[in-house]
Amino acid sequence: MFNQKRMRDYGVKIGRLETGFYNAITDVDGVTVGHVTLSDQASQTGVTAILPHQGNIFKEKLIASSHVINGFGKTMGTIQMAELGTIETPILLTNTLNVGTGADALIDYMLARNPEIGRTTGSVNPIVAECNDMYLNDIRAKFVKPEHIIQALENTASEFKEGTVGAGTGMLCYSLKGGIGSASRIMEMSHGKYTLGVLVLSNFGILSDLRINGKAVGQELKEAIIREYKEEDKGSVIVIVATDLPVSERQLNRIIKRSVTGLSRTGSIITNGSGEVIIGFSTATKIPHEKPADCLLISTLHEEDMDTAFRAVGEATEEAVLNSLVTAEAVVGRDGNTRPAFKGLIEKFNISLL
Image (cartoon, rainbow, N blue to C red; front, side, top):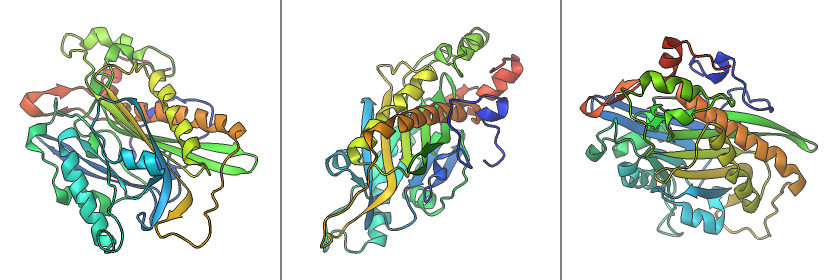
């Protein structure tokens, strides 16, 4: 996308299943992504917005689920999601200390489009997730403002940049520059063809653990740069899973749990200080806000079909993380702190990924 060189452009093919057109979360029909990037000296941060569909999501909710692999995080909105099994706002990603700003702006965005909220109906449940970008970004300055949130929400598209962009601007991955990455998989079943897409905000891992398609690439790079860059994992990863599979909330939760297989294949051991939070939704069924006269009819997969989805989410998560790494650009941020870009290092040291 946007002519960025992604992992497949280096000859690396992850898994067995085929990808969608963009090989991104936006291969799921109706899903769009928008960024606002704030990159200027000590400001190395931003916001990324994911719209689950192009209608009014408060009035037409989607089946949704969340899963916590390691709870070192400050995600907002998952309690109600777990209770009701639906999502009713877009999803925002930003830095840890701007979660409140993100929630406030997202609430304003929803109020402007739904005058009944807080009047003739209840309130609204904003979904905001975060990672800590304090090494490169002056996180205490809280550079992300409400207008940046609204701008990201109002300027989403099917094609979007990855790497050092949006919420990923100041993030690190495997001791190198990380950020936004995405991938998708097509699932062929007897009753139809379906898509599953993943978007990650990567901010975790130490270099020596990094593996690409099973190859210990990080170990090869470690000795060359360890004198300059300390290995330390104090980050997190947010994984957003979108699909058009007809599933129940329980089935969706089973699927998104398997994203951990993709994280692990890149080398993650889910360290103590790393928050791994997964949020997933299905576009297959819209749940009306207003109670209809009749019972809702929700189509679901048979459990025997689930293994294909389990494979898809693992493969897409693995490739999304690697895409976040290989598309990232190096930046110089707060107090002159910097992290190198993966693509620059493999070229400098002539490291083969195959």
